[in-house]
Image 1 (tube, rainbow, N blue to C red):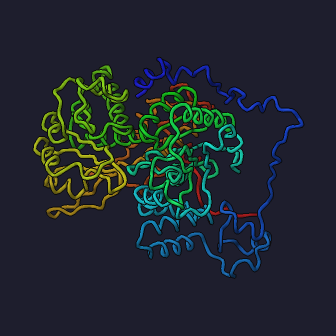
Image 2 (tube, helix red, strand yellow):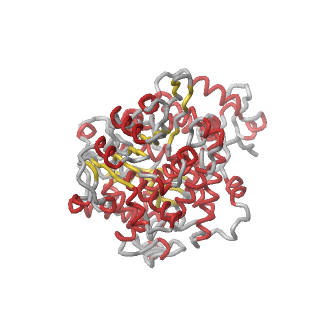
Image 3 (cartoon, rainbow, N blue to C red):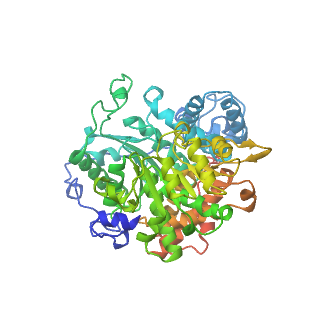
Length: 591
């Protein structure tokens, strides 16, 4: 991946530490603040101790009925609460009981978001202790529907909205956010939300959901997380004509206007928060995603979950599946349906891992990987008309127009779907994979569930139970011929929380491909024999905090090895250090 991005940067590597930036976070004084005179107006920030009614309205400190008798006296809460004193555990039990009364997932999502705005610690306590049940609610697939209806369910802001109206004042907007010590920013422009397309400003549900998982699964403090939506308009006519739409009602800005706004944003983030703040690009369209990652990879700590996070979690599943498939990664042939951010990102990381294992140049290992896009198999005769990120995958082969013929021609051992189009792994395609392979590996990764290339039941039924299956969104276990098959979920939530946490605890200042490989290896290492016996290639989410600690430790170790870590001295035991740094949502006692 780095080798491809280097070409776009004119040969500049993340290890070169570009002279366009400094470790201290200093950047060009775009806003003239360093030269400000005393007669210029400044903001007088003040803080006070919350008490009484205000304390009950502060989600960071509110405990509801769990305030003790002493706390009720000390903080003027007498009479503002019923007399009973509850425990956090009882509150959790009560909320989960109430939540399970809802039949519609979106209603559960709204209830969870309202809890987060009312009682932050209880929200994260629930999410951590009931992760397998609640992950599909706060993340994919329900978050997709929430984004589609975000204008209707919007009640109060959960992050920062930066639109074209704020051009020239983005630093000022960042300073409107009440928290000062930000470690992780997730930012979207809403152009490619999951497999749902352009949702404009309503894409805010994605940064909010991702950062909830950074805290619950990765251990990053909620106060250190900042969701941001950059609103440059939308090309979605339905939204433009919707009276309840909450964003700019104009067509998307493109070209210089778009990139100038992004440049101001990236400069302002570093000026306000320093060099070590992680900026995660989320759900940007292909043509912008690669450009932004290439442009800012050498000057900022940036990470694209759609390109790099997806690649890392899929590689982990592939490495783990070798125990069931046999052979090495280099022994297998890979065929992708979809050649966008996710597809090419995964393909490049697979090629890098094979290159690392075999010492063969990545240009050669790419030849084990084939991609199909909307026009058919990507081959060398199409090279002139291909987008730049597809060109490395244009191999010598006669043209093939559809996926079924590509399967028959390439004879892959692994079929991976990143197309964003549902039902594209047809019965004929899956049966062709089963005819070629004793144990075909089928990964239907598109989100949400409605866009999955095939279901778990279809994959197992059409291969007579021989398939090893994983998907992007969750599927229930499948009963077939008296045997229970547990489908894997190649969910980015396995990787990005622990990966980001590893960057934070090491004080990393850049992201390198070797860190992604380290994250994949850590995740694959958490799959046990018990999991393999059930056909699983990913560990269950019930152990996700432990998994995230191991991923964070591996990523941090690689950051130290590469000289990209600034938090010194290096801890002797990085796993224990990661665990000790993790946020815990238990209630605190107040003076």
